Length: 359
Image (cartoon, rainbow, N blue to C red):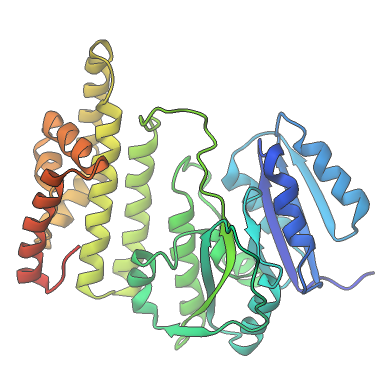
């Protein structure tokens, strides 16, 4: 029986034929060789399945799992269940890993075996990759998780190293009922599991860019109207994250305040986008919006916001269910018009007085 690999790399795959080879090739080009590559073909209707099989036939480190379409969360969960490595890394198939990514990550994991290893990601580069054998690192305490999220250091599953044993022992998986924003709670809760299992551990942030994400809009649509499940999904996401924050991380109030600000801005601008439709569609969209604003999850977030005396331009319109004001404010925010920026500056002055911070 062959020795199990040290690292399992999992790629969930669906309708990415144009970019798939680029992503897979970036994994196979790693300077660190002791890994397996698990390609989960989530019922992709294009040629992705055939491309995956081609790679598996050419390289014994590649394994392919074909399944009917069940969504990215289920595809990632299947990868977790099938992983044979000690450590697990996710990659989105339209993104690219630095050739030195696994080498740097494994070096950090061996140096900090009980800590939570995360790394810098950046938009897909137009320059040559810089060699990184052992990345410079910065250590952060668990209660700095809010800062890491707000500073774009921790918000995606492909910028964190996972212990397969811990995932298996705790049963931690992606929530397959979330069709949007499923990454955020998975990452936060995994970090909690690490720190609960290893008191005194920290975040180890690798400063070198190791992961390059493609932020090109591949939808081919010029519409800014978000899907119907967007607001509900993000509402549930924030509830799950804030539960971990309140129960375990106990982050500084200024970080929590900024996270709640981000929450209301996300929900408010998403709702405004849903309302930005022709007149004949307005009645149905308004009814949908009111039902969302009256939902228990949204009420819980708004009640917490009020009790903690946080401030946000979106709070009043959301609380009072003023759909016209939400729509206007969303338009101002999307276009970063001077009226929105002036309003934000007003709330920043209030926030400085209350919390010594602004966002």
